[in-house]
Image (tube, rainbow over all chains, first blue to last red; front, side, top):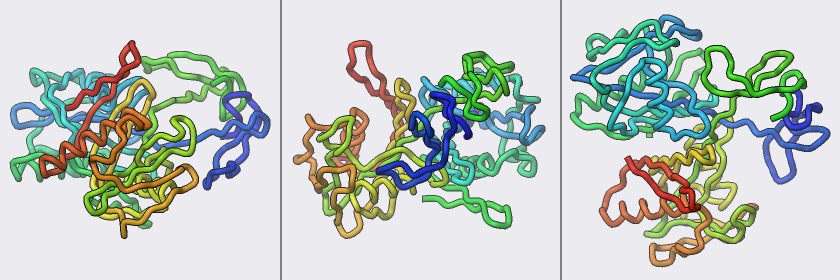
Length: 187
Length: 187
């Protein structure tokens, strides 16, 4: 951030009065520009013992498998955002949604929220950002070709709950280690 | 938003290629400025059958009762943010935190996440943004003097779970009606 979005003058990093963090503050109009984490919201669409996966048609991680998910938009609920992403990326509707997991990923300033729900009619097809969609059972999941650690963790949790015959709402943190690997803390 | 924070030139509302929503786009450098919901994260600190409340020392809702909560910051987890707000607003530490509820409030572009946890040592005192802190049992909650609908709903859920002798993780939407009242949808 170099310039004030309100007046167009230069901003500088300062700790505003009464605050304890550096913020971009306009040198002219003194507007404080806060930067906060973003929410990514998505779905595990279920049908006939399988779940809907999609292969990414965009960078990053072009050609790898993921779930329908994307940045939550203003003026929608978290759940509406998850359903919208499922419609946009997989031309699919999802019903009877329940919150399945919440992951914080502090090093990229994101919080992921993932819902389970019924894939209406079992029907899906690739949206603009997908190369392919597929209904997969656990044995069919390509564990070595998953786009993001948070998606691998969501799927591991999911199949653990399936094996235990009940679903909980889970909360965890995904923490990047100095060597580039990830650890996951559950609470 | 009037000016580009990257280059300082004017922005205009446009639907970028491949998008379906209006965004502020820089007329000069073409940077797209996305605006997304913010997360408010907070706590229900528990001690000896009571919970910690705080009275707001800032606007909006100066002098009304709330829980420790505030905007999640970059580089922290959702749970760390809740604990940080509890420290800043009530000089209190919280332990053994579990996710209690997630509320979407689409008309103000916010998602609230609230955790339950143990108020360490039962100790608290007002931080800069608080006039007063108090440990209250259910009968002591000043239901007519609560700062925000989301806090009232969180407390109602909490005491419902207390009465039922178990705690779940809840998800709901708080929806503002045309007459200014609020309805809450649970899923």
